[in-house]
Image 1: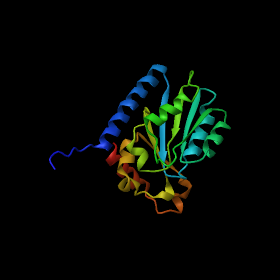
Image 2: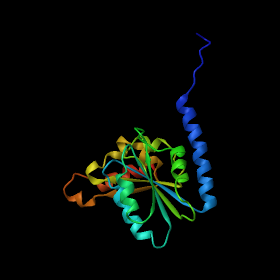
Image 3: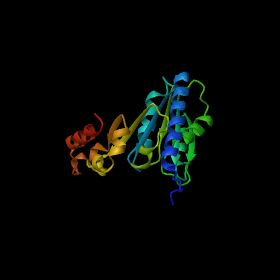
Image 4: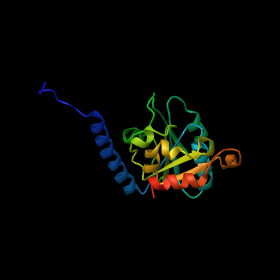
Length: 191
């Protein structure tokens, strides 16, 4: 029994991903390209925010978008229709993107002179927070109908995100949502 060897796969996977993500950040820094990872639940408004951002910035910045979905191209087609370089990553059941997947997406994209690349990660508040994509910054979207208690339920997502967008604020009058409680909870995890 003492001869049994234990291999911590999760630790090895995260270590390899971290190295790849760090290398990706160095590559993007050399190219002066900003990579932003957007994470949220399904239906929170990731694609809508990306499309609005593209429309506001595309005349002044060269933008690319990496779309992640388990098995569709719906969002990448919407993005491409707005006149920017879009790549679809079908994760085939994976509930997140990691640095290797993002690297494949970047390699499929015409990077020449891009200023900003936006990743739309898979819709989920758990898995995407666990994997470093190589992005310079992570942003998350929380829609009002999801509730103000999400920092209590999904603390890692709030810990790894440098920006929080509260979306669907028109529901504030109809939902039991305490924006001050959300702010306090989020800032307690990530001041």
